Image 1 (cartoon, rainbow, N blue to C red):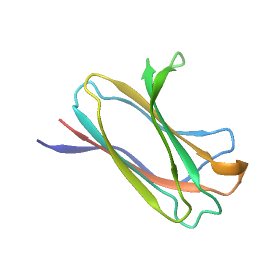
Image 2 (image 1 turned 180 degrees about the vertical axis):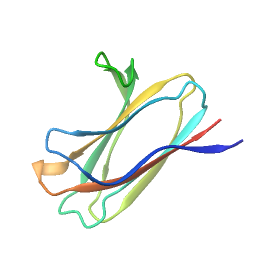
Image 3 (image 1 turned 60 degrees about the horizontal axis):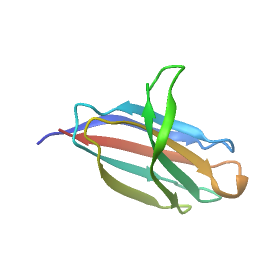
Length: 111
């Protein structure tokens, strides 16, 4: 088994209307670990992970929700998912429509 870094970022603004962190085609992988951190944030951030059709195209749309959880301010959450043959969208939304929230994230896949 090998782990592959598929996506990462730091200092990404979590906009009130939501911010997409990544859209990933995971057809070559059996599982992913998604970590989201909220360093020095004024509020918590909601993470929404959805199965998506046609990722990274203008026709991309969410099919259904894989998971939804809150990352408290100044903390991080890491979760693993079995995702054989699926594509996902990872989005973040600041709780309470607070501005000034930023996130760091990583997505590692396992083949």
